[in-house]
Length: 215
Image (cartoon, rainbow, N blue to C red; front, side, top):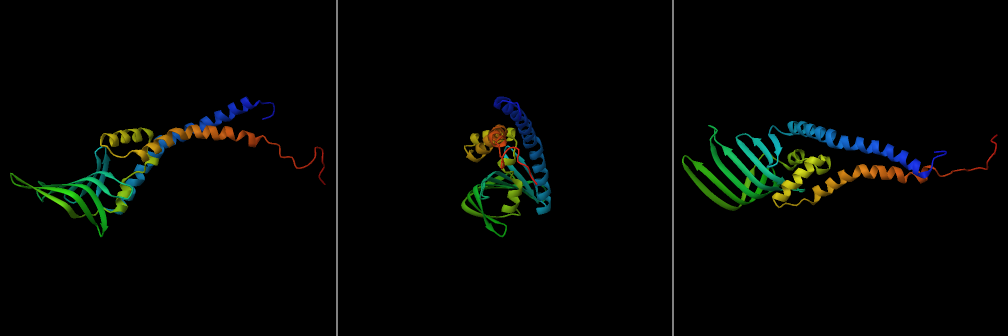
């Protein structure tokens, strides 16, 4: 730093910080989401034989002859806006169950509330409504935690798209908005922290007089 003004030194440090910020942004946008998705698939295969995919319409899970659509999963692993499509042995649609919320009770059992069940028998369809119903599934909170990627590990583009999806469905977006701003401001914070370290780096730390000799 000898011979450099504070402005010149800050410029050099900010340039190095810009490289670090760019590398961090690239890793967060392209590497982390890809590796997280791969790790999620590996954990899911090791946990259960069910097949799952995530789309804008929510989570889609296949188990035996049932397809389950979960609109969202809360932080306490409760299911919101659940739909269960069940098929018979001939792969004909046998019933469609809709539930506003599902809460895990243990032993692979879920308590569903605000349930509507449409049963198909030939050309007939029968609608049943139940305030509370029980549902047995291989899905557990552990599997759901594998299915759901935490916002901090999503890319900025995916976060923006998911926030818009939640807003369209009038759901809470606070956690995802915080994660979005954190990812957007982190590169700037890296540059600022490096510039703020300059005064500490150029402080004189003399412990003896000039010209002192050591024996």
